Image 1 (cartoon, rainbow, N blue to C red):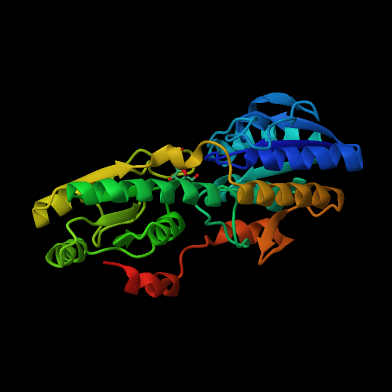
Image 2: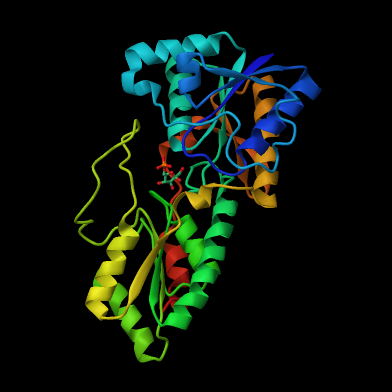
Amino acid sequence: MRVGILTGGGDCPGLNAAIRAAVRKGVNRYGDEFVGFRDGWRGPLDGLTVPLTLDTVRGILPRGGTILGSSRTNPFKDADTAVPRVLAAISELDALIAIGGEDTLGVAARLHAEHGARVVGLPKTIDNDLGATDATFGFDTALQIASDAIDRLHTTAESHHRNLVVEVMGRHAGWIALHAGVAGGADVILIPERPFDIDAVCAAVRRRHERGSYFSIVVAAEGALPVGGMPEADTEVDDFGHVRLGGLGVWLERQIEERTGYETRATVLGHVQRGGTPTAFDRVLATRLGLAAIDAVHDGHFGTMAAIRGTRIELAALHDATSTLRTVPVEDYEQIDALLG
Ligand code: F6P
């Protein structure tokens, strides 16, 4: 078979491991030929390809990023002209494996449902928020980076008797903030699923000071919002209509310092969480999903996505993966409430 592969949306550690697994099994087991599309959906749209062979995937398993490049191109933004061009590129192949998160796989789901495109999905995102799978690769690495950073911030916060706000990624879901906050022993954790009361945050910080702990660690997902919303929200949007986030950490720094009178500083971890070498867990998960995706292609299971459920790799409908995001359940957050402060 001739199989295309693309990686779209925000990059994450493990993408190269997934590409390598699909190519190695495709070539070795099935005798496939591969075409790499550059930069997500921009590749099939503009005919941008790179060779994908056993040679070009050699040595990429531990490498962060993606050898194919990525972008947030959305062919449905200009559907009349862009979708036929993408479909034409896919029709020259027997199948396409699209590796992405909600946006990239949302496009794949529509191309399959509305145009019968022979697409199989493979889930990735550091946000860990795709439906129909219990985990996405990239998350474990981001979590490790964020909790290492919190450990480091902890010791300096304590030495200087100051509060430190750590802004982590997480647009709609607070998985990184919640898990890194728990792993790093944070005093306050703010997630998008639960609007926060800035007075309650300041009260928690004050309580710690009164008890003799002259510092607090506040971990905030970039998409968390104060009750009533952010006064200075950004309005610039990408192809999928998402505003560029960031700014919450600095806002919290100002608010906490002004309201409590205690020195407060913010650290924004940003893209550090998406870069560098994947953890062993992410390499293994990405590899297992890559192997399942190429099998799904050969079994003709188009419109599906390789997913992990419990410890098993299964196939899920692409539509189920992208129609509802997997956010942090209220009970998960409430369970850790007793640890905070
Ligand atoms: O891919 C997910 C993500 O890392 C989100 O956590 C974050 O909001 C977004 O991507 C940032 O995207 P970009 O790098 O395009 O600004």
